Length: 190
Image (cartoon, rainbow, N blue to C red):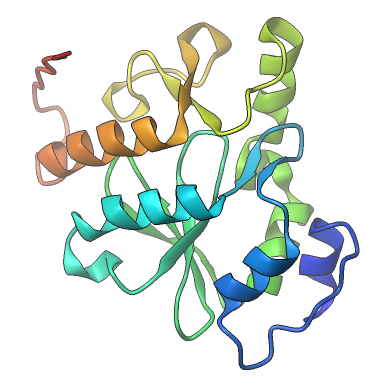
């Protein structure tokens, strides 16, 4: 493993080699929030939960294993070929502009621009106004971003990552093929 992942994980160098990358990371990295809460390294339970949600998605999503999430609940999956891809949860699509050829390349991208990659600037602003983001929670819009909600502190609230995935992926699948500008009604049921 080269230095990107080691730098991101606090200079704990380990070699993935031919091993399963998720198992290797799981045995070396303590789950939890990093970069002022903007980056969430998923725990075993969160990975299993995310994988359950992913199985409900179209088959194009089934190959990878979720391992980390950004501040707003979009998550990265590592694939058998070692590539890392980001899943946009509100639109249920893979952001191909975020493809990285390896975990190390992913880590280098996160370190190079943490504001864009994981939302670190928003995490700092949130902490200043509301205190630190509780572990396992992500921020989302009161008005969903995909429906015109703004990326502003006034529109944000903290939600458990698992709950966010369930809601966003369900809504995302429902609106996925609608043309831009379509009217949408969301019924909230307890």
